[in-house]
Amino acid sequence: MSRLDYNKIKSLAAGKRIPIKELARLCGLSEQGFHYMLKKQSMRVDTFEKICEALDITPMDLFQTEGEEMDSGSSPTSVIIKAREADYNDALMQKLDIIIDLLRYRG
Image 1 (tube, helix red, strand yellow):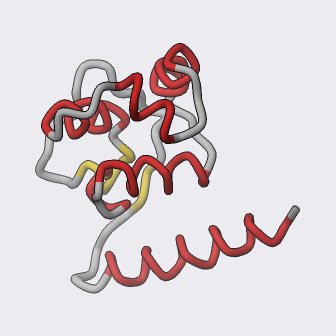
Image 2: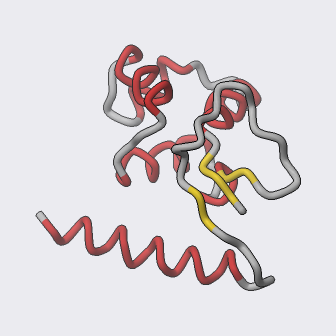
């Protein structure tokens, strides 16, 4: 299984020396709003895209894989995705692209 690991956002930003305040600004959020989003473990698709772009990562870099241990701050309500095949990542990326396109044209 893979889970969206919201704690990775902070650690990847720190590793790239990008302050959370700057990452929040790049995503169009206040620093307080950004921290709230991480605490609630919920974000909009466009925010997810902006985070990946700002950190120069792929969406899959924010997912926790089977071998990784959950951080104490992670919630069981995180997005859960079952991974069983080697080509899973490609299929997931295609589905995410479709979802993102649908959300963009929605309104």
